[in-house]
Length: 418
Image (cartoon, rainbow, N blue to C red):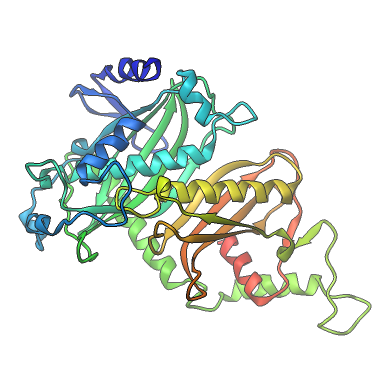
C-alpha cells in the first residue's frame, strides 16, 4: 500500500506547460493543456487495456477479427493528427525507495538496461496515443504497433542519480503510411539524461500486414523541421540498406583500410600470407566474443504474446556491458546506442542465443555488436531476431585495437567503422 500510495501521489500531479527538447540546441513548449503524469507501471496497465490483452498468460491469443472493420486502406480517410496530440509525460519515481531497488546498480547509478525497457514501453504508448481516434467504443485499438528499430540513443551523462525521479517526455515526430518516428527525452530536474529516436510500425493483428495510420500535420516552422528531419532519417536508412555490406562490396577506401590492417599482421620474418602476428597493443577480434542463452518465459511477454522488445534490449545491453568489461579490463560507460534492428518477433518459450563481440575500437571508444537468434530446438535451425550496436568508453583509460583475422571479421570491423 505504501508503494502504490507513493505512486498515486506522484501521478496525481499535473503539468500546465509541457516543455520538451525538440532538438539538441533548443527547448520549446508544445501544449498548455493540463494532463496527469503517469508512472511507467500505469502505462503498461493502460497498454494492456488498449490492445485487449489478458492479465494472465495463455498460449491462445484472443480473437481480434472483429476489429478489422475499424481499419482503413486509404490514409486520406483518417484525420491528420498534430504533434501535441501524441505528447506524453511519464515518471520513473526513483525517489520511492521500493522502486529504486529495481533500477539501482552496484556503482550507485541507474541500470541503463531498465531504461531501455521503459523507452520501448513509452514509444508504444505514444504510438497508440497518436492513433487513439481508431479506438473502438470498448477502448481497444484495432492496430498492433511494435518496435521496428532504435535509430539512435544519445546518452548525456555517465552516471544517472538513482535517487531523483526521471521524467520522460515524447511525441510522434514523423509518420509514413504505416510507420512512425518517435522522439523521447529523459530528464532529472534540469539535467538532460538522454535523447532517443525509435521507429515503430503498425500491423493488422490478423494478417500481420502493414496497417494504415493517421497522418501527421505540422502547425509551425519548428514542427516542419522536425518532420523534414524524419524524412531525411528515412532516406538515410534506405541508403544504408542499399549500401549494406550484406549486399554490396566495401568501397575502395574501405578495401584499402582492410588491406593495411592485414599487412600489419603479417610476420616480417616470413614471406607467407599464412603467418599472422598480432600487432602490439591489439587483440584478435575472435577473442572478444561473449555468449549467452536466454529461455523466454511468459513473464517477459509483451501485449501481443511475444517476448517484450524492451526485455530483449536489456538482455542484449547487459551482455554487451559484460563483454565491454572483459575486453577493456575497466569499468565501461555506454555513450550511444545505434541501429537496433528487430527482424522478427521472438515467441514465448523460445531459446534465444545471444553473441556479443567487439567489432571496432579507436583507442578510446569501442563498439560491442550483439547478434540474437531464435533457435528451433526441434528442427535444429536458427533465425536472426535482432542486431544491436552499443558504443562504450572507459574514460581516460585506453582500450586495445581490435584486429580482424578473417574476411567476415573485416566486414564487421567496417560495419563498426561506418
